[in-house]
Length: 144
Image (cartoon, rainbow, N blue to C red):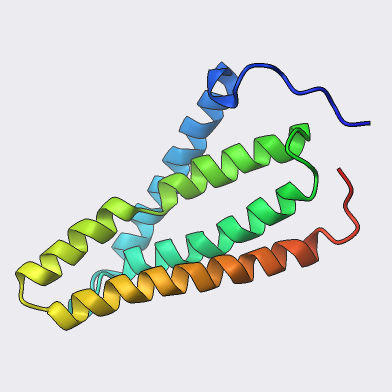
C-alpha cells in the first residue's frame, strides 16, 4: 500500500528544512576541506572540479535509488532531501565554477577556462549517468 502523501510541500515542513540546513552545512564544510587539501594546481581549481564531479556521481546514485521506492516513500524522501538537496547541494557549487572560470578568463587562460567548464559539464553529465546506473544496480528488487 502506498502511503498517502502529506498535502504540504516538503519545503513547508520545519523538520525537513532543518535537515536540509544541517546536511547542507556538512556538505559545504566537506567541500571547504577538499579545498584546503587540494589547492589549485597550475591554475586549475582542482577542489571545485572534484567536488562537482563526485557530487554529480553521488546525486545520480541517490536519486535513482530513492526513485525506486516511489516519490512518497517516507525514508526515500528524507534521504533525497538530506543527501540530494542538503549535503550535495552544499557540497557542489556552480557559483565557484563561475567565479573560477571568470578568474581564469581574466588571467588570459582562455584554454584552461574552456577546458574547465567543458570538463565539469561533460564530466558531470557522464558521472550522473553512471551514478544512475549504480543506483539502479543497488536498488534491484526494491519495490515502493
